[in-house]
Length: 152
Figure 1 (spheres, one colour):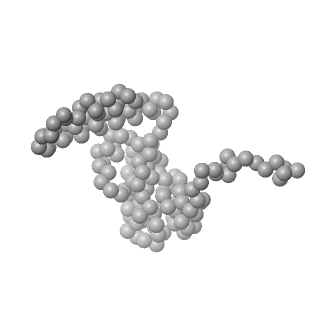
Figure 2 (cartoon, helix red, strand yellow):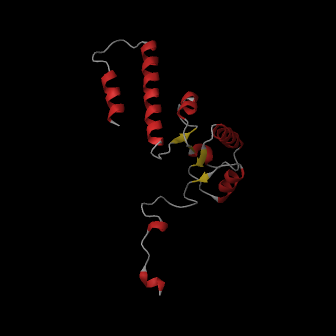
Figure 3 (cartoon, helix red, strand yellow):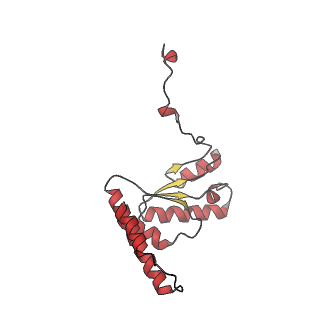
């Protein structure tokens, strides 16, 4: 880990100079290569990577392709009311198609009702996350201690 952070720190300019698009592109590629190397090393240790809020913000398709995430979490703004919103349906289907092309698992964030849950499952979403399925918790039922009084 230290080698990754050390590389970023040592390449930082010691003085301010005007922004130059060529230098910016070089730094962008350098950082991307560093992240790819970091991800490759961690994958060897069994770590998987997820891209959160897929479809929102300014995620570059280049990064989506090059970083080869294992999981994409589709942003809640596309998930809400997907069963009744034709615009969200088209966007979700496009995001699923992109994820499938790159061999990534899909997770729909903020699934709040059975209608949306059924639509998402029927259209190929791999996992559903949201209050319909359970509230976030630090102690899920499968790791909570069993009450010994109930076993008798």
